[in-house]
Length: 558
Image (cartoon, rainbow, N blue to C red; front, side):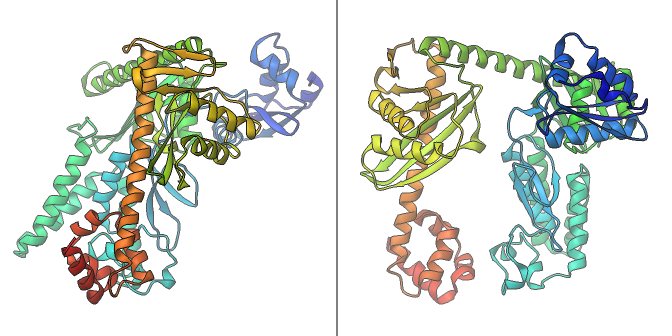
């Protein structure tokens, strides 16, 4: 436990302080006056300050020039070290970003985590919108998406022939022109979406004047597609404004990100802290793009200080468009909080009704699927606080196993020797499947609650017996939703493997299709149906004219 002796020589200057235990950061704070702020910690007789001082065995300080430096340093240090006594900003889901690498010839991709050397743009609302936007931008800016070593590429790939890449990898474009186009794309991803519209319109008009109506129509279609994608987000403003809307209730914060008049993100976070804490962590710790204005419900002196540091303007609207945006954000937040509270209530009921050891905030569900013992696969899906977490879904190939019980044992051994246990494991099946799961956990020296759902009469199976609920009971409805999702994912994966295997066996007997061409086709097409839909030109680009002719003639008779 620390004493006041530790701060005897601390100056009355601005800075950041670090309480540590066993070399680990347990609390990080900032202060306009370090000495005065630390004294308040040591004199506390209750609350978090008292706990911090009692637990800490070391204290460090960094003196800075002003409050702005202290605020920025504190935010970055909290984000990096995540001390247990600091209120931490938590995503309610994993949001997608568009990533531009820092290579000499940058590539782009959609990612869910901010890892890697480059620039991240976003987050965006959902991956569907992000993919649609990404595909439209590819047609306009023709950037590369491959990560291959450019020096080893001898000929352009299919993306070049489809007009999605400029062919920079094989010298089809000057590097300076490519970099200039990527810089223009960066401006778009920073919110200047009107640049896309202006560029596409100019190209369309240019081709029309040259009577090149075919290419003019292509740019017209790109423009229509772009507008369609942006309008799916639900808000299109008459003015090309860049602003955020932030509202908070019940430790839950919602952010609308509006760029060039389009709503590009609706983000939801959890934080046990004030609006000022949220703004600091969202913009400073996470490096989120700072808009021209931020709409909030109320302002404070602390928020005014942060405004100067961020270089933005906080607005509390009374009427007009900004007030309508604020009201819409509040309505969305209240709806999301209602869902969260409802789901938490159902999970608490589940704990009591099924005799679980803890409230199952995280449930992982598994299902086994096979075709007469062939292509046996397992799906693992994740529900967190009653909501699906698709980015954490996993699929496992288990070989050719006819025994469902053995498949469950193999899956549990493979996954949970490396991963943390959930609060509850759900299996699609009855007492046999439940017992197989318990046996597997016992073999790896771990313990986890397991329940199953027998299809007939929707009876819930636990190790202590069965529970039958009415069909409209919220606990049963959640478990049925969980079961149906595990079943869907497992069956889809099994069918994909089956069709892939069918395509592989067909390719084995076709002249001019050797191992190399076979690999290329299997990487590109997942089934015979998908291959049949491809154009002759596309297939010829992949494997050559002679092999394509041989392949297509064989497929004709299928």
